[in-house]
Length: 117
Image 1 (cartoon, one colour):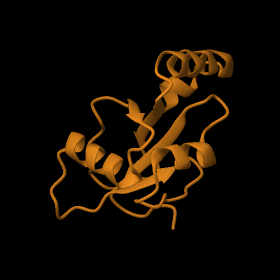
Image 2 (tube, helix red, strand yellow):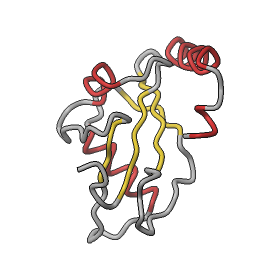
Image 3 (tube, helix red, strand yellow):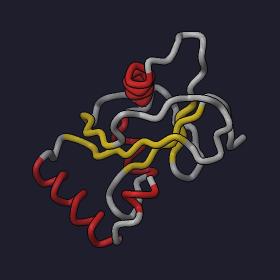
Image 4 (cartoon, helix red, strand yellow):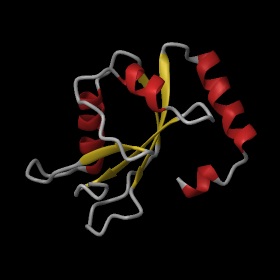
């Protein structure tokens, strides 16, 4: 997140605006491993995602788990940038409307432990 957040707010807003114009049915999401994490969980190979508005948070979590190649026995928590764990059956569009950043992106952090609780 640090690399992307180093861009100016205007640059990030312009990028999200362009994405939303080109793909109005999609939601731009950035996903990063939490800095407070002490576990040995891999980093994602990519951090930017475009997902359909009707995808649930649980389905998105499944996508992240697959990209991380996590064993089924390992827990994975997904947090908004404010530390909220979204309800897994909520569509991403609801989470986006409630937790999007001022730059137009939805930021998630992941961890294998509940580091915010």
